[in-house]
Length: 395
Image 1: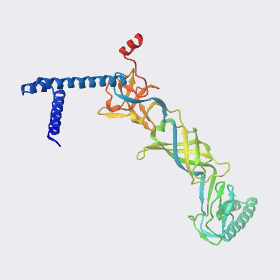
Image 2: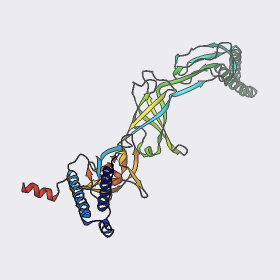
Image 3: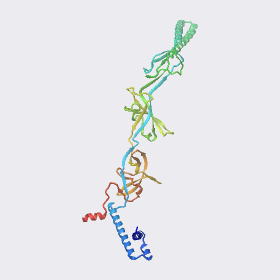
């Protein structure tokens, strides 16, 4: 580069640096004047400073005009809605037959016959199996013979008139009563060889066969009365005061999700389980079509009046040393409202607070919000300033 170009470039750079110092650092002009910088150069630099300042001021005014003449923070708000809590209960439970009996013999012995098969319906008192009873039949017949003999002898002595005969008649009467008791005992022993259904219902799988030796602990079959099912389920302790015996409910079998069964509360436990903080409740469900089985899993649902609380967006909940709160916007200004969280849902939070339906709470821009300060709500036209009103009136 030629010498004169280098000199010219250096002069321009120096002048630009002086102008920038004068513009950015207050008092620089006086310092440069004392250092011997010509007044004309300082005047040109100061005129450039003024022009830049004017341009910046005008830009700020134009920016303020575009923002509506306000420095209030911009926020996004959502209206408060009212929601219900504790209005519905859903719990899992297991169904049981309203009556279920595992039938066992009263005595030990060999099974001579089994009179039912799995799935048979039996009535109360039906004989479902029989043990070998030949010995008991003989004992019964012997007791019957002894009774007949005692009866004849008692009648014979009763007809005699002598004193000795009266004593013999008394002994004969005692023998007669003893023979009657012996016959009853023999008949009872014979009857115990029959295994009888204690309830009406459906027989389960029969696990024994004729010829097996059974004892008083051997299960012949399980009989279920499943005309109704009992479903035990556990509810949180907050529902304790809301549930009463006879209250309606509905149940859905997990294996049959399309069918809804109506039932009632049959029983309520008398204490809360300390480990789970739940209350045991028993429901009764009709099974007139016999399409439900004991042991099935059920989802039980109950409806309640519920409690109404304000519901806010989860983003509106803020925390500080005093606890949870939200920012409510009233007349364009922020107001701090303390809240207590009642229930968290995927899209809302139920709270206990002095909030009304439709109140606006801040969900975005909460970091710039201060108590009592004005805010600008996104999507809403800001109110016209006094100067703007006067210009509109003049126009």
